[in-house]
Length: 178
Image (cartoon, rainbow, N blue to C red):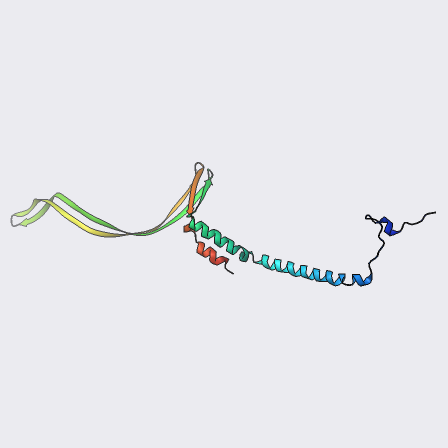
């Protein structure tokens, strides 16, 4: 005949002879509930911190930016432009110049003057030889837009070198403030 084996005999660590009393397990339910609430609160706090990561990163980025400024660092990069790439530039120019003239204008010519006399009309040739000094400042205003429309014939490599001190680091710092 078949006899069932008691459950205490099947336990992997050996037979269990003592069972937990209800008095000993009463504190476990509230403790588990408190642990779950604390875990939920801690996870909520972590989500709150991760919702605005700039607050956590701002001090580290500020230190890194300060060190970059102190080291007089530069950002170096090479931009590769493939062959056949269309290039379209509109370059607006609005410049004022002053052109100083300091020269002599030589004149060496003959002027024919018609003269009316009682004996008739005569033409007299008068030679003119002179040097006229020109000392003048001429204002010159150039305002135009130069349009460049072309394409590259071969691959171009344009090296870029940007000093960190020329970047708007103060604006970056302000954007990280809460």
